[in-house]
Image 1 (cartoon, helix red, strand yellow):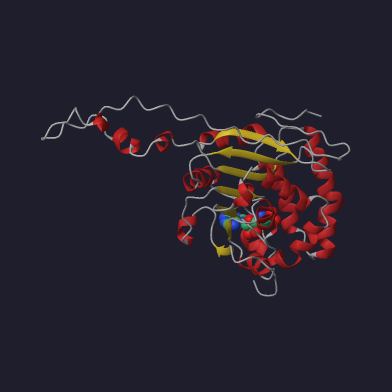
Image 2 (cartoon, protein in one colour):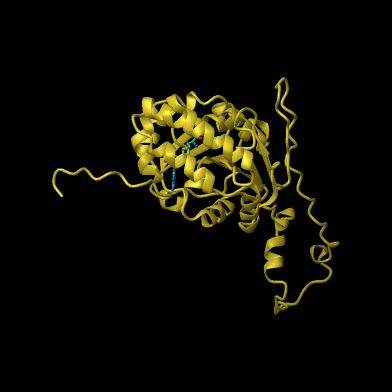
Length: 315
Ligand SMILES: C[S@@+](CC[C@H](N)C(=O)[O-])C[C@H]1O[C@@H](n2cnc3c(N)ncnc32)[C@H](O)[C@@H]1O
């Protein structure tokens, strides 16, 4: 119909990156006004326990946006090689305007099919900050992250998760409608993305469900911790790791194990060859536990919590 501007429909999971295109220029200002936003991202990347300032490591930041999470990853692992991916051209344009070391590269791509953008593993750590909630095929995406990780390497999901706690849902709704959405109206001129943010966080997995989702995708050693500030029990770090490869313990073990019933070769087996007469392989050492974070120091009112997946207090 001529003369009628169709109202934009509600933002759907899967079409989120297009909305981020429209909000990219004001995104940094809005998150900058959210106390703790950058600090919490840094807390999550610290919790990944990346060794040696990341020297020799390849890390992936999926859904990097304007680079806030990439900067947090760089902070935890300044010597690593970091690939940062996002599906929004405009968010990436904001990211690449900033100054980065040559070890950081930005790639346009869909988190649900990273191979299409030439992103191949193995990675020594993957961060997905405020991304998973926006994906259509979350389980498939997690399985893909699992495949891209080196055995033993960590995945960190930094995300809102309020479903398990009435108190968290009430605080979240109050902050969204009392602060975030009105601020978006003034600073971004539109509230659609931020109303979607409110709704999508309410609908997203509770911590128990996300823990189970990570387990189903093959991750182990799953931990969840919250952050300080008004986001306590609202924003969480979910950590999991790809199980260590038991075959990696001894070179050649994988080939042997791949074909335990192999027929005796025609020339026979030389039983005097010491290599055929080795003692049984030692069992690989168990994984070291994920680092236990230190209680945050000097922070009033923040109770450090480390739960193996159990819901926060219902309030
Ligand atoms: C809330 S922002 C978070 C950005 C950044 N990680 C941070 O912590 O500030 C979510 C980002 O995910 C991106 N995104 C959403 N769906 C995506 C997809 N399927 N593939 C890649 N990026 C996606 C959006 O374009 C947006 O930049």
